[in-house]
Image 1 (tube, protein in one colour):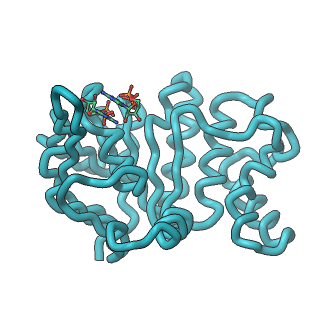
Image 2: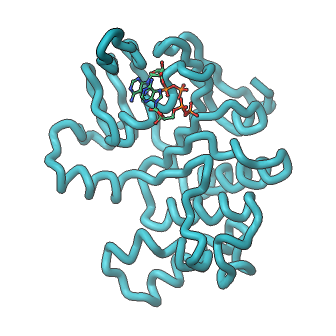
Amino acid sequence: MPVLEVNGLSKIYEGKKISTRALDHVSFKIETGQFVGIMGPSGSGKTTLLNVIATIDEPTSGTLTLNGLDPQKLNKDETALFRRRQLGFIFQRFNLLDTLTVEENIVLPLTLEGLPIHEMKSRAQSLAARLGIESIMKQYAGEISGGQMQRTAIARALIHKPSLLLADEPTGNLDSRSSREVMEAFELINREDKTTILMVTHDAIAASYCHRVLFIKDGRIYNEIYRGDNRQVF
Ligand code: ADP
Ligand code: ADP
């Protein structure tokens, strides 16, 4: 069963004078463990697509299933739980709390789940070790580098073992060295944990880590590339 299945998804923003068709009958499937990129020019519908999948925005028509569940059929409480249990989010601006330590940021999503503190700390510790940020666990998020911030955000997004990790321009604020470190972190958790990843990016370095890249323009997917054995820059 695919992790994500999107069928004929359209999104129209109705304005006073004009309406914008941000998504135009988008359909695709993502199988468990795939690492998929979405590329396209500004205004092509990438953020809208992520927002609809993230249940932040509702589609005008079409369907969406995540692990066989249709978020459009859930009530408000169920949607909040669905988002928390099934999805992890990574943003361009990291969205960490600067006045908390790296460790406190990573365990934050779990404090809502009521897990014992030692269990939270041990999960955070093992993720941090694998992402190469164990030495900065006691530092404040406001005083670490951009690459370290993004790896902290990845650990935070993974702490509750989501079925799907959604990333919006995760390397958009990083230099190329930090971008590679962050993409290697994505590659590691994709390979070892079979975490399925859907990432919007403008960045050819980031896209080169994907198994598959969907190209979107004017709200439509017009091309799709699969990576062969040799890494290629799209
Ligand atoms: P991208 O992320 O690829 O830059 P977006 O999904 O942000 O594209 O936008 C796709 C189109 O939808 C653009 O024309 C944009 O102006 C429009 N759009 C996005 N969000 C809204 C909104 N909330 N209200 C009206 N139009 C919107
Ligand atoms: P990016 O392309 O970097 O993701 P944008 O500048 O396209 O960001 O959009 C930033 C935010 O503004 C998004 O949440 C998008 O949905 C919203 N937005 C984009 N275009 C419009 C619009 N025409 N009207 C209202 N909101 C919009």
